[in-house]
Image (cartoon, rainbow, N blue to C red; front, top):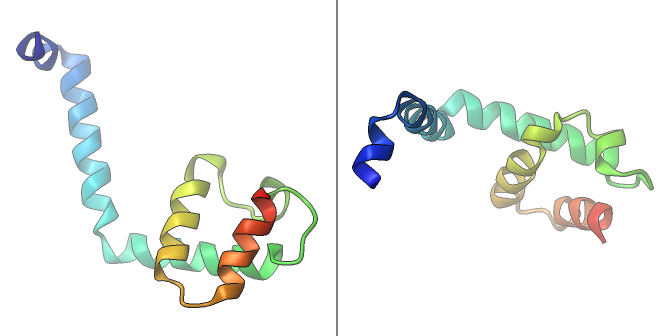
Length: 88
């Protein structure tokens, strides 16, 4: 069954796109952009009473990845609190 799935053009494209996404995840420029987006988000939203979509300006499809990357790189408790306050 797996061999049959991988032979379909749609599945090959999905695997190819997945590989491209994984490669971009290790790209230095992608990391820098993610960190900049996260830092801007914290500045704009840390005291906001709005939902993250209203104050962050980060596209919904990218939001969770940017937040996760930013939190993983951050050493500041305020960064964690900014994200936590929007979701609790």
